[in-house]
Length: 198
Image 1: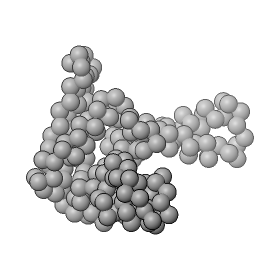
Image 2 (image 1 turned 90 degrees about the vertical axis):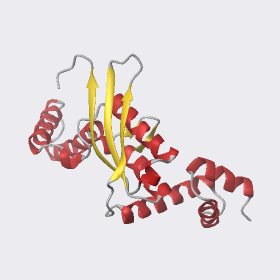
Image 3 (image 1 turned 45 degrees about the vertical axis):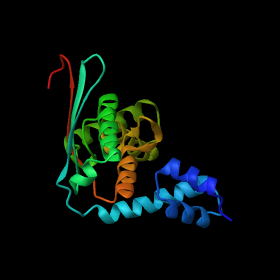
Image 4 (image 1 turned 180 degrees about the vertical axis):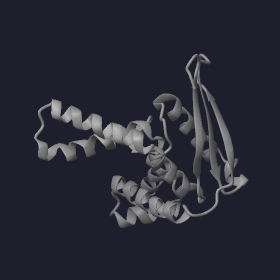
């Protein structure tokens, strides 16, 4: 028997609908933590289905950090102006802009990292591993691991979310897609710091 207070707690923690929460709790024998994972997995599957849909609406989010020495301009697109006006969507745009201000990504995703930059990172990682005296046979694995860390630091979608490092910005986006029922795309962003060269 699924308790109403568990359904309520799951709804509050995930933002999912009552029936989805009830089903998730039924599928996981009332375990709230497992139900959260279940809902996230379902959300990722739903987000993947929506990924091909055109997102031409949305908003330009402007965030100025207190003190007015740092600012972000960000374009986030969705499918309809109806979703663009929802509080959830507005909050998502604001959270992503704050992420950019705090974590200073250079690229949106790994596809945007120039090959030359990637090769340079691999070379640095290899040189460091050799200098640390690592065995030759494990160096490719070490380089691979350090390149992954590099992606997590410079690619917005790969970065740990500033409010919950166990989730990435991509997770945050996919959860919003699942919740709002539309494809949502971060199109572009720019971060300004007073006195910094472009």
